[in-house]
Length: 164
Image 1 (tube, rainbow, N blue to C red):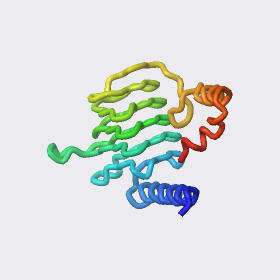
Image 2: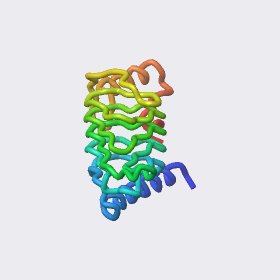
Image 3: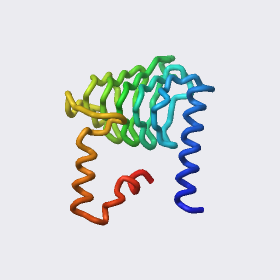
Image 4: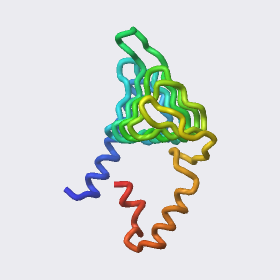
């Protein structure tokens, strides 16, 4: 099977999975959210998952809404224009503000103010007052890609290679 067919299959499965989360599980996930096929949503209290528009949830990121040992079932909110890095873990009851970037592998145990970058275990604020666009993408990201393409001809198809 070709790489293009596998990519198309992955896209179909991802969209179907998001429809399942929204329709069957009643999660509050905005239609513009993009999510890796391996991202995990808490199915114990699915109505507690809230994800804002134009947010990207990367591979193996997890959003939790319960702590069974304490009998805790709470709402966990992720704002709009956020990026949740791969393997990140959002603990129950956390609210992540709009325009935030969560570093890969971070364990977010407390609320994150809008326009912040957090990373680590437990996650700490690395920078505040950041400017990001949709999906938590830095505003100068397109310019950076253009500069790479201009200096390295083999990077001409960089965005399409990164999307695979």
